[in-house]
Length: 173
Image 1 (tube, helix red, strand yellow):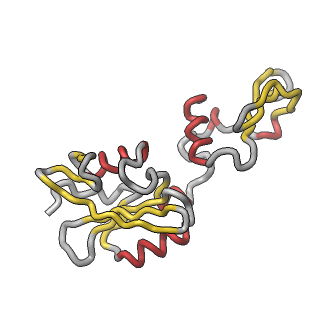
Image 2 (image 1 turned 30 degrees about the vertical axis):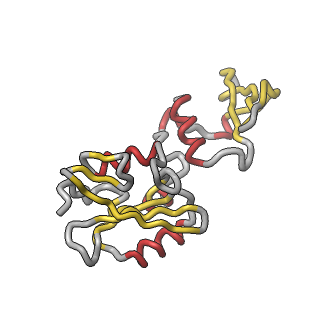
Image 3 (image 1 turned 90 degrees about the vertical axis):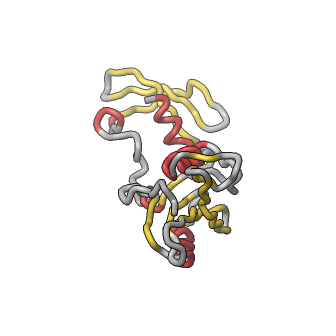
């Protein structure tokens, strides 16, 4: 039996669902790196990690040995939460790194950025001249609420994933 049982409150944990149900959920999400952890329907105390990659889905058995959990035996962890946290940053033997849970797919675009001072109405900014550009976007001069000079970084369509954009915004925040 797996010692480190996932907390039911984790958005990535979906309890005792079958492989087919997990596959259907991930197919509907249609998002690279979308994932969930599920309890085995047939084997008590065993868990699987289901991940979408392109048009394919992969199901990994979460193994346990000497009180540690792993998918790839080069990367072992004290519990499933630590395994998930690691694979969000590194593929570490998976087909892709873990990017979003099924629950994250329905979250607003600003998820993780917070609201209030970090989210402003674009109508309050007047865009001015271009200051520079790069592979992923353009930086333009702007005027916020008519009197505050700002730099506005705008992502080029299709230049980066939403996940990468949110990560960059977190750094700039």
